[in-house]
Image (cartoon, rainbow, N blue to C red; front, side):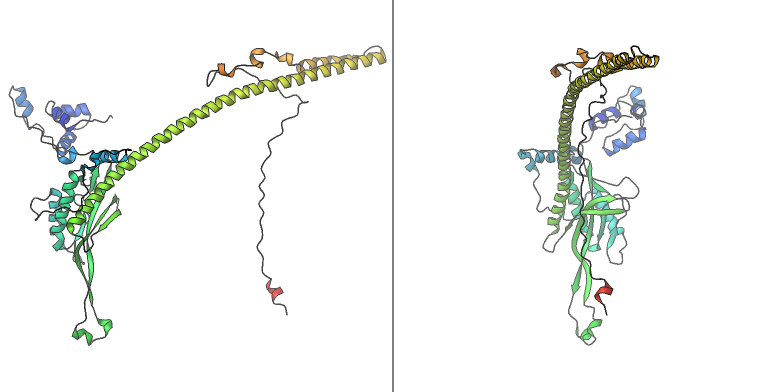
Length: 437
């Protein structure tokens, strides 16, 4: 099944020119899937009865395509920023997004981002735990938050600014599509989650007059209470667990506006650095591929050169072996003739056994001659021009003449022998020798 790629505008034109049922057959998916995609991309679809009125000759109203959300308009901003930072001479467009040192929060909770508004509603509806804080950690649509009731509005306004600012940079906050998991910020192929926790501070006081009358071990001079400061944790969601990679803790001298700006920049830096790391990884992969291609080409050249050298060496070796076989053939023939001459000079004639042996010996002489295998053949046994041989073959034909028994075998290469000298450590005196009576 091939992947269907359409822009938002192309999808809008298709759903208003072709009924969803027919479009589903064309795309090999269900009309429900197309309708869900249109809803997610904010693409209007024809209302009920639209195609019947159109077939009757009427001109039903066509809903216009709304302007795409800013988060969709700037989806590739992180990748483009990483590409510019990765280039040798970054252009000045990289400075278009100024790093935030502080960002203003809304004065109240009216007009909050829908996700921030849902987070505030969920927190206010939660039951305080034993620590007195409100906890949300099992929702798939809002981040994990653990704060006191007094801090709910501050967290909601901070999260609203984080969502709104990151959307202007092409970062979208999506709910988890499964049953168990956490929502996360998405940009390109990367995602990171966010959790917020209010810090608890320990308050220490001086003992009062009544406490001073009791032993100091009974004094309860410390208490814990919400600090109004927060810990923001960024990380990767896991099944049944969450691992935090980056943690930002609001110090006592840092305002909520400042820590919110730091969180925005950390999330943005995560996506930009991830895209940049991906570009660097691709570049290294291309360099490795180029090096591997060069290595393979050099290896093929070396194999070709070695093959030609082996053919030339084998032909020279065959010449020496053929000469040795020829010498053995001639020496053996002379020996057989000498035997015949000696027997005739001694007896005047040959016995049947002697004649039989001479016939057997001369029949074996044929196998010793290199001419028996038609050596030499200039085409297979002579010189050749390596430059005239096509790269990679076909290579000149050659053959292997057996090694004659009079020709010594080549000396095998020496084998390396590693000597491991072990030195025993000094041993103490035996007990019976040290304590003699």
